[in-house]
Length: 303
Ligand SMILES: Cc1cc2nc3c(=O)[nH]c(=O)nc-3n(C[C@H](O)[C@H](O)[C@H](O)COP(=O)(O)OP(=O)(O)OC[C@H]3O[C@@H](n4cnc5c(N)ncnc54)[C@H](O)[C@@H]3O)c2cc1C
Image (cartoon, rainbow, N blue to C red):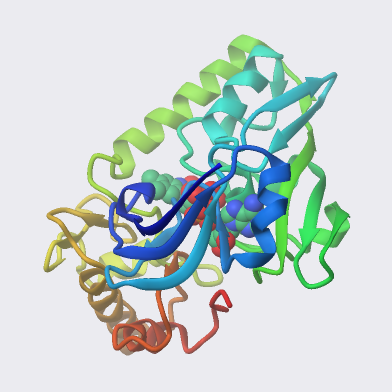
């Protein structure tokens, strides 16, 4: 397994932002992951929902993207934590199974997608989830969690607090028509292509969660944020709930812009938007205050 000290993390994230982390490990098997997991501060997948600080990050991070692969048996699919959504969608389509169409063009890995209960196009991870092999960091043992144990909610689950590491998971899909599945997948990819920023400009998907019965994008659009810039960061001009890394943005640019968005919506609509992305930086640093102003510590930081 590759382990790097003082690793430049920027290119691991879809945002293409980030400084040096104390240590980054890239296990290739579950055994390798389990052999180090208790010594590390945080486990990540494809880093498509995170903003790394551009400062030095005094943390030891595991990235699971090399632990990938899946097995199909009848209507069941078993996936390893680092497997990416689009690969699983394409394998399910080949097997004539529906339920993963929303993962076509989706940048997350299964560890992150289960943690966040990823969803799109009226489908979510929780719909087809059966069970997962989990490593319980506190009790230092492997356990199995079933759907009822997972407490899947809107962009969270019982593994969101960082105490449980998803190793592999089972899903039960439904038999379907291969052509029809392919057509839906293509439609989903086209939807993303026309309405969301491509990864040519770094981004981390939706910045804020939707408030109950409303849409963060709608509120931010009404506050005229489309195209607003801060340093190298800009609000995407087709969807106000995306921030893109337009021109070598750093984490401070993004956090400052997020603060402006949060404050304006709060002032105009008395709604406090909650970040959907996770910020990874050190609590002691000045920049962390910018994050605290938005989250008021509603998001638990890793150890
Ligand atoms: C262009 C774009 C479009 C997007 N569209 C959507 C969308 O339509 N719907 C949606 O829901 N999201 C969307 N996202 C956000 C993101 O892709 C999802 O949140 C995804 O689930 C994150 O997966 P990841 O592997 O990248 O997780 P990461 O960003 O690596 O991590 C996210 C969280 O998951 C945890 N985690 C990762 N792996 C594990 C593991 N093995 N065990 C336990 N915890 C783990 C991390 O600790 C972290 O807290 C989009 C992002 C981008 C860039």
